[in-house]
Image (cartoon, rainbow, N blue to C red):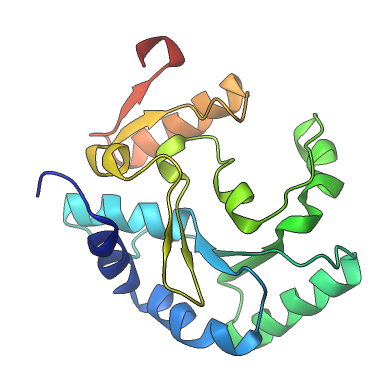
Length: 187
């Protein structure tokens, strides 16, 4: 396979048992603008490329939604409901709340997000900016899939954090040694 089409990506990642379960069961929760995102998806691709089980080494399955009720209490109700249903392997976050805690956690402010896609597009490594919309099954991949399939780790210029990118990329390369890290000067 030369690259990966959106349909192939969705079929591959959706065949991982926990991702399949989320795609089947999350719609019942009626979370607005809900996506399965990031690690559970891109790690499944890299595991597939190396012949490992799709879910090997995946710590949690991230779920983003965007609800204008950005209160802690509203998000906490969703977190508790999903934990009661799925257990502790699902991590869910309302992207409308990210700007409220981001500065304290990462040391710099972040503008409010207006959608889950905004959160997906802000990960440190461009090829990890992937999500599957739960209701439609559609793909969100603002940087495409070519680098993901090729294993090219490029810093997301929209998230100006070179030190965090370097640490994240090195941790990925430690698990999948065939990945290549490209600095902004390389691209």
